[in-house]
Length: 104
Image (tube, rainbow, N blue to C red):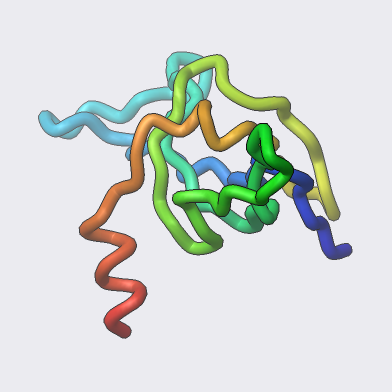
């Protein structure tokens, strides 16, 4: 199934956190917090300003992002969990990963 977000919304897949701490302690599933890092799967064209001109988004498909703990709406597409959120819920793009992907 294809999904195309509208306006300034993005479709995000959460990136799972490590299952071990730096000291080697394994964290059980019940104690894990939901990760606040994800990969942008699809992005809408952008929001319209007061004059009706579309302002493009700063994020694009493939970017790794950080977002707030309670950001977005959880959905399930083709048996996989995703988040739909507005671009304003994104706190930042992780550049080292994005730069490596674009260079490859």
